[in-house]
Length: 257
Ligand code: DC
Image 1 (cartoon, protein in one colour):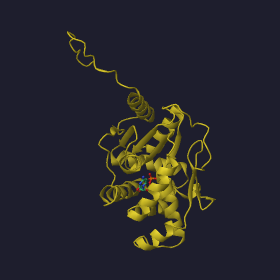
Image 2 (image 1 turned 180 degrees about the vertical axis):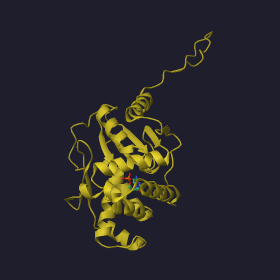
Image 3 (image 1 turned 135 degrees about the vertical axis):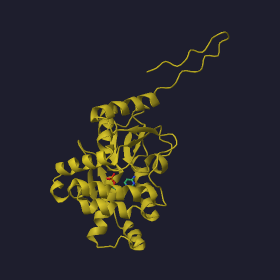
C-alpha cells in the first residue's frame, strides 16, 4: 500500500476500525476478508502475501531457508508494498509487480519456511503495523490478533477441517492456473506440514487471541461464513447498553438469538 491517504479514511469509528482475521491455510481467510472489507468499506490487507513476496525474493537469491543470518540481511534490502485491488492486493516487491508469482507452490512452501525466523517476523510486523496505523482495515494472517494488532477491536479466528481446507486450496490453485502441478492429497499433506510449522514455531505461533471469536467454517458455504463474520463484526461494533440498576427490576433471562 502506498503512503498516500486513502479515500476511505474518515473520522467514522466504523471506517477506522481494525478487523483481524487469523487462522490456518485454506480456512477461507482471504475470501472472508475481501467480503468483509467490501461490506464495511475497509481496506483488505493480506499479510501472507507479504511473506510470500519475501520468500520469492529469497528463492530468487538462492538463499537456503536455514540461513537465518542471510535472510535477516535480505530484509534490509527488500521493499514490499501492497496496492489494494478489487479482488486481491497487488504486491510490489522492490517496485516489481510479483502478484502473479505468489501462489506458485514453491513460493507457498518457502513462505512458510522463511516466516519462522524472529528477525523476519519483527521486520514484517513493523511493516504491517505501519500499513494499518490509520485503521480502516481488515488484515488477515496468522498473528494479526495476537502480535500485529493485539488491540484490534474485532478478532476472528477462522478454522476448518484439514480435508475441507485442502479442497479449497486445490480450487484456489485451479483459479490461479497451478492446479495441474499438484494433486489434492499432496495439498492436504503440504497443508498439514505448514500447519505444523505455523502452530509450533517458537515466535508468534498460530493460535487464537484470547478475545478472538472462533468461527469454524467446515460445514459452511461461503455465504454462510460471510454472514456469520458480518454478524460478529457488527456485534463487536454495537456498544452494549449500560446495565439497568433501577430498584425493583428483575433482570430478564437472555433471549435466544
Ligand atoms: O496466508 P498465506 O497462506 O498466504 O501465508 C503464507 C505463509 O506466510 C504461511 O504459511 C505462514 C506465513 N504467514 C505468517 O507467518 N504470518 C502471517 N501473518 C501471514 C502469513
